[in-house]
Length: 305
Image (cartoon, rainbow, N blue to C red; front, side, top):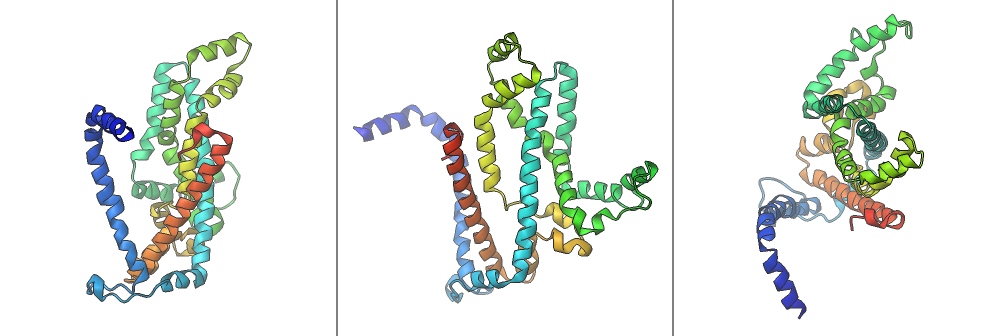
């Protein structure tokens, strides 16, 4: 009986299943088939050998990874910048979306939205070049600070490690805040307008309506986005660190993906790089499950699994 019911559902939803089939095939080919390459982490992989000729070394590359002191420095940089990005890059788009949602002038609202979205489409190469000029000795930031009497001489912002984490986070927020606010704005459109009218009748001002109507109305979306952000905590990429970093701030700019590039792929240590990739995947899945479990206890509707 259950099989018959299941086949009936498949038949009634056959068009939806056919529409989703190309995407399922794409995921299988580009996401699951490459997992076969994880076997390299347990081999001493050499490109000129066939799979069966590769010598198996077990967990040797993982042991080497955890014995390398540089790995822990790289993990520190990765986690600090990831946490800063999570705190600022997750909360500020929500605040920005709340403020945009309160604008009543339609033209001005659309103008602000468009301007805030544009930096997302600018490549990190251009963004890094632009901020390198702005933050240089003769850049606009130093000139403005000296004109206001805040500093007496130019500051080498990109040559001092103590500034690097904050600068990278600030630039990333500037670039992505508008784009990341889209999903929250879309969720706010689904909040029942009658709730705002009822809150206004009860004497609630704009701030109270945001706190007691808008935020509870989008709490499920906020929870889901938080879970996904935590799951990607150590997958911060390397473009911004690679482009904004230099040898003077290397101790603060080198993250896990740069470590893979410099000490794995560039020198032909493909097995070592694959071992780091597996480590990242295991950490990401663990963080995703932990975040999902915590959110499920707080807001059952906001869980992913």
